[in-house]
Figure 1 (tube, helix red, strand yellow):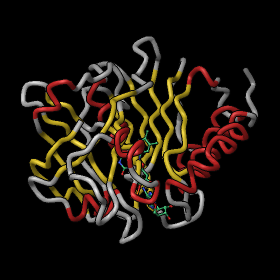
Figure 2 (cartoon, rainbow, N blue to C red; figure 1 turned 45 degrees about the vertical axis):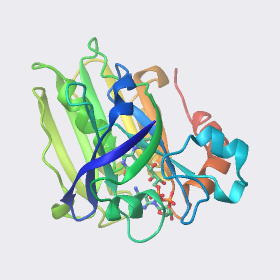
Figure 3 (cartoon, rainbow, N blue to C red; figure 1 turned 180 degrees about the vertical axis):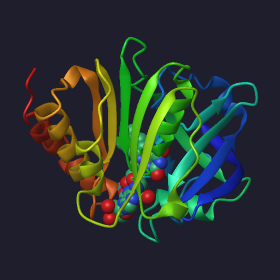
Length: 264
Ligand SMILES: Cc1cc2nc3c(=O)[nH]c(=O)nc-3n(C[C@H](O)[C@H](O)[C@H](O)COP(=O)(O)OP(=O)(O)OC[C@H]3O[C@@H](n4cnc5c(N)ncnc54)[C@H](O)[C@@H]3O)c2cc1C
């Protein structure tokens, strides 16, 4: 489906919110998950097809080097009445395709996307919820916190560069939130290692940079006694690899990560 930028807002020095609208969103079927995501299709400069295109038709009819670049982004919010979709983009310098696209986006710009899909929603039967990640996971963590009812317990550890990159988070749940800054190696892992876990069964959501996430997952399985079933854990991106290079090795990385210590 094709959407058009309605508005952009600089949320922090490193994150831009893009609100999308357009008639195609009448068919947007939002799943019942708080980590719902869409697949963006971003054409290269000078692409020999219209700004409104069908990604499958482009793949059938045009040479590979002109195909759109694929990037996956969380649905930060979906407003069915206004038919508007909100995505929060990390802008990590000039590198990449999607981050720079968001930095340049202006009302009226076209964005082609496919989806949505999703897999996680906080388990209402859990005694407490652990949500851990970096800026790329912040949209899903923020949406998850908004879905938690009063009386739920949420322990949240988020990493960002500095205080000006922190964002306000709304929830009715009892919230234990710590923002960690990238001022030393393993800062996010250490914040999880040292947290006071509430009693009872946890349900965890742990997403972000691949190596960071893998270390935290191993700690939760090996030292905190969580099982895989209690955890939604996936590496969203990897340092020093663009998404094409990352997708080439992601399957092997996830297989190795899955083989890490699991007491279950
Ligand atoms: C299910 C899912 C949901 C996601 N949701 C979001 C979301 O809501 N918002 C969001 O911003 N990202 C999200 N991501 C991560 C996003 O898809 C990746 O960060 C993607 O690589 C960004 O594409 P790019 O074109 O900007 O950079 P790329 O071309 O992929 O990478 C260029 C360079 O930038 C580095 N890089 C990539 N991402 C980051 C980052 N976050 N911080 C610092 N450096 C980075 C790479 O290592 C590489 O060196 C999600 C990923 C998945 C799998």
